[in-house]
Image (cartoon, rainbow, N blue to C red; front, side):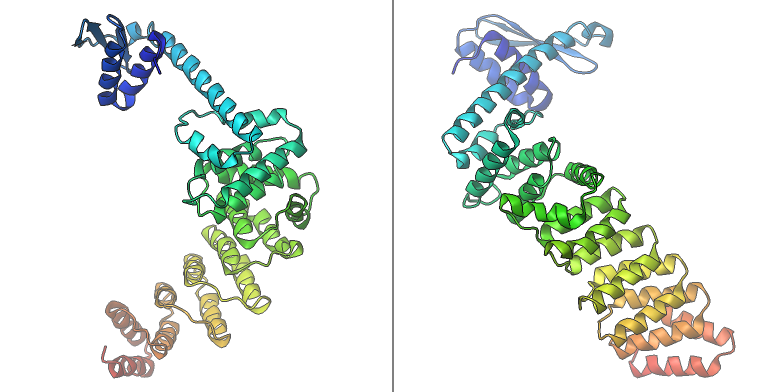
Length: 398
């Protein structure tokens, strides 16, 4: 493949900003193909380096020019780069079209490997009827399943997800793409949280219920699952749509998708982040009593930290008692957070009781905390309790 003068200029210009060593190789290739004399203007934000070919030699003329002078060169080169980019995108789209027409969907990930353009190569789908879009994308997703390694179609998933979420009919097709993306072990790009939340809320404003939207996946051959719904929950929480996240959590079951402990953990964690402890505590009790789920230790730590931050230490102690009564284990970090919260509020008797409960489950408070508990009890005249707590620590040889 022989490049034109214009293409060599553009390629060298692009590489000088990213891979200078490769730009020299391109210049040598230009000489090899008979380009005996031309100049390349390396334009950065503040300087300009002129690279000139003469015969078979490479000469770099180091010239630092004023930024105002460079304004004459940048528009020209930007125009060249834009033309080259558009041409590359068109060629890529034509290649993808050809593979789609030939039903060679598994070859599409290979075509996207060299894609460096920010434009979506699947944007031409918008010219197809909606039912044809669904059919093509579904066939593509199914063809990607046996591809190995499973992460190979990652870029294809990313472009498909971006396209479907920004299309005129984002749901339920984007949820199907999201499901296949997650099942392949790929992680969507961070911007997906915003796009998915926007698409979901837009659909909800049309008076669609949570269960109905999720059930629509069945109309195109897919079924909602907890992994897909959990990503939706994470997206809504990431953009502070906590009220909607709670509605999705409660509506999942209506679509045959039962929330798991991760589903509750995502929402409870988000509620704790904004210190909505009442809602978080109610949701935790609901997941344990109604669904028989065990909260993760990370979720418990977040809830106890939020209660401590709100100085709701009595509620934290009551929650510990509830969890112990229900037979759920509590980790060292959660106990320690509650003890420290008690100390901060000068609830020394309460701190002593929680510390003893810790020891009954094999946990020993840090030495500084143990000392502060005994000193605090002594300072308020609770000599008997102080002796009892000290004796307990002594029995544990701590």
